[in-house]
Amino acid sequence: MPAIDRSALLFLVFGVVSLWLGAFFGLLGAWQQVMPGLFDVIPFVKSRPLHVSLVISWIFMVAVGGVYHYLPLLVGRPMHSPRLVRVHLFLWMILGLAVLGSYMLGRFGGREYWEFPPALGGLIAVSWFLLVYNFFRTAMQGRGPWPAYLWMWATGVVFFLLTFLEAYSWLWPRDDANVVRDLTVQWKAYGALTGSWNMLVYGLALVVMERISGDTEYARSRTAFLLYALGFTNLLFGWAHHIYPVPSAPWLRYLAYGVSMTEWILLARMIRHWRHTLDGAQRHQHVLAAHFLYASEAWVFLNLGLALLISIPAINLFTHGTHITVAHAMGSTIGINTMILFAAIFHTVDRVHGDTVTRVQSVRLGFWLLNGGLVLFWLSLIGAGMIKGWYTLMSDLSFQDIMVMVRPFLMSFAAWGIVLFVGITLLAVHASWALLGPFLRSRPVPVDRSTEAYNR
Amino acid sequence: MSHGRSTSFQGVHQRAIILVLVGLFAVQTALTWTSSTSVAPGRGSLSTQALIGRQLYQDHNCTACHQLYGLGGYMGPDLTNVTRAQGKGPDYARGIILHGTQLMPAQQVTPAEAGHLVAYLDAWASSGTYPIRSFDLTPWGTYLQMNDDARD
Image 1 (cartoon, each protein chain N blue to C red):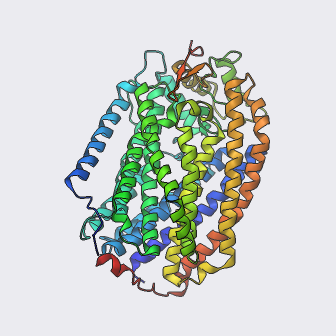
Image 2: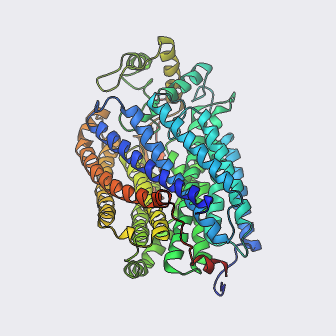
Image 3: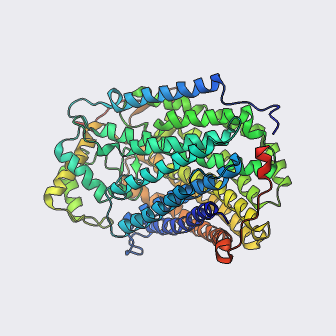
């Protein structure tokens, strides 16, 4: 097997391990919310950042591993520098251990989602710079106009680096520092960061979809570019719906409101094409990766509906700061991103082993437990958020009194979390085992004949 | 590969659109970093003491459980107005930081550090009100905030 493939596959393997660990700490954190004091060795103040960082790591590792895996196939050339891919992987391994160690020791210092000591953020920026350099040196070697997925990946890698640096701008001392600017810039960067990694993930979805269906025209069609442009506009300007209540200039809020509403176009398109989606799901029902892609489309539909509603300021007033925001985050990271990333992983597994591994019964069980559990988990959070939002604004009840009313929903959320965790475990075990196969047996990766189709 | 119904994204129009969007983003970024987030004196500005408090807030990962303007964790209450809310105040906040509650452990900080944390929380309290309980909804899906009583 070429060394570059080994590194790309290792990104996927470590991504799956991150997911499993992240899901474990997420389950622990969910139960600590309803049973404070549970497993005090790792209190909530540690389990939450462990969960968040590991799940973000899952998204990065597999999205970046997917880019390293598919990019040479798509442009018909090897990666510009396989050595830089290995250096990138090595840096992330070191970084992962340092972040886990700092959390376990209770060493924080960073901000929400990047709670580790800020010096480690420098390592992320350096490793990301290697990706940007290697990506463009490789992608520029391809012939002809770029399809939408290459534009998505290019946008994702560049804007991630820019907005990641912006997220750390609080380290820059300013005489006129104030909390409004602090919070606004922080969530401006976070909104664009999320948009950037979504670009990587959605690009991956297009590639897998293209490979399963054999339709190489869609990623070059006007529709694909319209959706790319819509996503890019939201990446740039849609972030302020996170900070509607913050007293920054009103135009920031109105612009975000207007831009967020352009996503109705996406929703309308999905409804229009629903029948086509169902037909496709039937046609490709024998391909496990296709199951994950169709599940992700259903989750885009559900989560986009929720996102559109909570982007309306009058509704956001009631939902902001409640568990509905968590439902939105879980719907995006598990329902959409995780489904697409599993599609990419099982598609890669098919390439490495043929279809036999992905037909295993327990993988299908894992798929249904993950999706079924997630629906009820998501609804429990929405229920909790509706209670919290309504009583926070419309009553004089204290926070503690409101949380007593919310508790049954949080119990349900934690219970369905167990089902989710079992589903993720089944999928993670099979995915890791299948991806590690070539390393354990020193078997070469079969040549992917479909590559030729991309280079005609 | 056939490009019968495909479109090139390398045309002048597409590149122009990207450039316009990135240009607008640069303008928005500049404004966000300056005039659109500047505050009147005493309305959220961070003193030297409050800046030390900000780092302590991050070092103790307070955001895991608490929110500011509804952003952060869900275990504990939002702290935006804790130092100025009726029945609470700086001493209340300092007491909880140093001694904890039934659900929140006492933080391992000195009394001076607790003072810095309270200064940081007070910067938030001086900046505005959250949650917004007094509002008027408009037909456009927006709302008008009616008063800002927790600031003063």
